[in-house]
Image 1 (cartoon, one colour):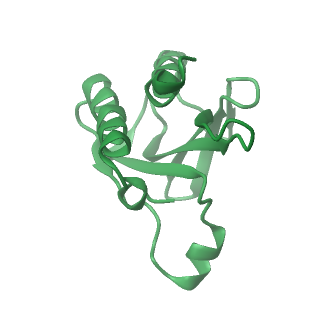
Image 2: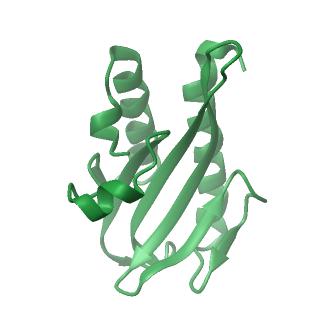
Image 3: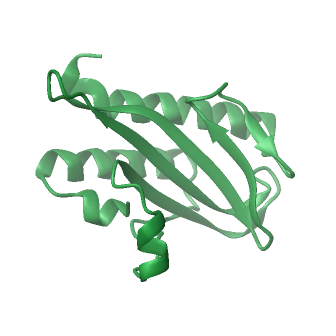
Length: 143
């Protein structure tokens, strides 16, 4: 779900802003997009209400990223026993004019796969960024 729609309280808005700032600190030429999804019926059917989705766009196609746009989806789980909502993983996908060209998932094996993967340096920075995202959203649970 678009980050702009998920910022329903001060804590969530602050955490989203922290994620955007962490990314822009590492990659200053990226432009953030808190509404990466269209607001049409077909798209709304595909949106995961248990995610916060943020897009980043680069000017031109980056050789190290091998993409022009990045979509970050932070996945959450609401524990029915203790009622805590925590981040359980991050999905990052890179896109160019062909569509999705690579993907990194912290739920799977933490490695990039696709037809045009980012450089090893960018992949390492992305993994560190994903670790920071999980820390930011799970700090209130002490995990």
